[in-house]
Every structure is written in structure tokens, then in C-alpha cells.
Length: 203
Length: 254
Image (tube, rainbow over the protein chains, first blue to last red):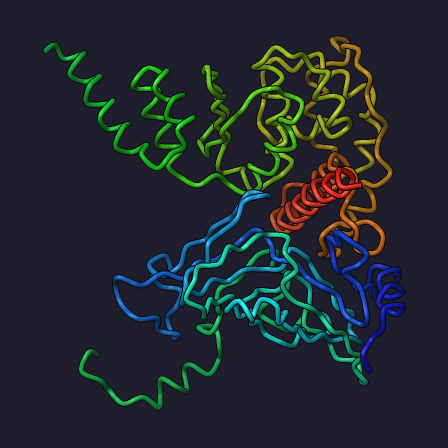
């Protein structure tokens, strides 16, 4: 069941352990019609063209500075997103999703019509705590300014029928306050994938 | 050409080359300094400022009528030029909003503005701020005043180590200032930090009192959990700054 406006507010008034937290809410209008608007934060990871080699998801932690740069804007500054550029941003808001709720993240179509595609993990798990990392890509032919504080996506909350142990205790992504780079290298499957691989010329 | 002039010219050429991406006002400030000192500042200014330090500097320096530029150094340093103030803070502490709030008492000492702006803005957080910020000189009267007003409450709020440190200054040297009361919100913010969420007000609104947040964070102590809590506190300060500006714009538009 999708939560309506009244229940969203009621969830935000509960005791801390069970509270739906979306902070800072700059305007009550952000909660409207069964969704909560979230805004673009000030911190970004800019992906660059690597001078040394491709990204290997098995060993991404090595040489990350070669293809990514962390940029933090002061409040009031803006950033340019060039055509075909990908940056990771984060929501201005920090979230705490109660154990009996989950959320879907929906990019605003007004941005899509300018060529700005806002993607993210789409589903926010019960028990998640932290800001959401947003993948921002400019698919148009014209650079676009990104202004922190802009409403960038909507969260639609659903109830979960049976309670789970909660993402915060299980997941790899709990608690970030800014954008986080992919943690693919931590996947437990890599040992098996390596076992499947045939030797190549460069090994 | 003598060695001194040759060295000066070499330094100036190096500064010119390394400072090309800096703002014109910063380059103008560097030009006013002796070459060796300007070279040290260039090295610090080349690195991007630390987010928590910039946020706290913005909050701390509001009462002062000058332009400033922060730089991540190894210690507190201050140079005033005709165009702006260059302020270096200890980069290794820059993730911690409590330590970085020491920009305010440091600025008060450097400008000769007296302790009133720091007392008014930091209130009971002044003790932990100077303790964790590592400012150690010229503090006797104000630390004495802090201890006399807030020593007992601080000892009950996880700040025993600060109280112990302040006692060495002695309350006899305490000066008189108009100290704000201990903020009620500090305990609530500390519970939120310890629970692992960004401190907030009702229904997702931002915090209302930065000094209460600093007290809450300082009360968590100096252990491993402090860093995680400091990141949450940074986010809370950012939320406060954005909210203040947002509300000011809405008020202007009526």
C-alpha cells in the first residue's frame, strides 16, 4: 500500500526508533500527494576519462583517483554537467526508512526532458539510513547547470507486509551522508567469477 | 644578482605559476606577503578546502566584517591583507565540526574583537570547542568563565575531560560575559547522533541551534564513534545553512 500525505506526516512524528526521517525538509510542500520530493545535495563524485586503463570491477579500489574526483560545492554554487558526462550526486536529505516501509525513487520527468537522466538504486530498502546516491547523466547535447537544493526526484513509500531484519544491519550502504562510489568490488561472487575465467594474454 | 634577490625572484615565479587557478582576490593577497610566506600559503591553498571546515568557517565568521579564504594546513594561522584574511586550520581535525568551530575564538583573538562574539554564538559549547580545536593560549579568562557557568552541567553531559582541562586554568581568572543558557536541544541531538541519524527538528525540519549540536557532538567523546557522529553533524549543519538561506529568500519575496 502506498502511504498518503497524512500518514507520511504521522510517521515523521513517531519515536526515533520507528520514525520516518527525511531531513532537512525545506518546505512542507515537499510532502504532497503520497510522495516526498528530495533535493540535490552539494557533494559530487565526478567520473573522469582514465589515463591508465579501464575500470576493473574486481579491483576498483586500486587507483580510483585516476577516474574519479570528489567535488564539494559551497551552498549557492552550481556545477556544470557536460554532454555524455556522468556524475554521482547525493540527496540533500538524510533518510531513515522504518523497518515496515520501503521506498521507490522516481526521477522528475522535467529534468529528463532537458536530457538529464537521474537514476539511482530505485528501491530503498526497509531500515535504510543515509543519503541516496544519485547517478546523474546528461544525454543531451548541451551542458546543464546543476544547482544544489533543486528538487531532483520523488520518493514513494510503500508498507512491507512482513517485517525484515532491516537494511541497516545487513547492507553495505548504510549511513552515508554524501555520494558513494560503487562497491561492486566487495561482492562475494568475485572469487567464483575469477575461478570461471580463462587465462588471458595480459596475465 | 645577489642570492637574496635571485631567491626572491625564483619564489615569486613559482608562486605565480602555482597560483594561476586561484581567485584574483587570493592572488592579490599573496602578492602582499613576503615570498617565503606566500609560498607556504600557496601550498595550502592548492588543496580544495575541507567541507566541514568551510561550513563551520561560514557560520563562525558571520559576525566579522571581512572577506576570508580558508586553507587546510597543519595548525591555526591567520594573515590579514588589504583584500582578505587568509585563515589556515589544522587539516587533520577538519572533519570535526567541534574542532573547526574554534575558528570563531581564533578569529576573536586575532582581530582583538574580544570574547563577546564567541561567547554569544558558542555559549556553553565554547569550552569543548577550544579544547578540541587545540587552541591553548590567551584563554584564561574565558575558560574560567565557562567553567564557572557550565562546569557542573558539562561534567554531567559527557564533557568530564573538558572540565578537567579547564580546571587547570582556574575559575579565579574568570571574566564576565553574558553567557547564553545551556540549550535543551543538546540532549535530543546527542540521542539522535548516538542512534545514527542526522540530528533534526520536528517533522524533518533542520536543527535550530548549531551550538547545541556542537555540545551534543562533543559529549560523544573522542573515540571511534566520534567520526561517524561528526559526519552526521556536518550534514545537520549543512541542512541548517540551507534552511536559513531558504527562509531568508522566502521572507524577502513576502
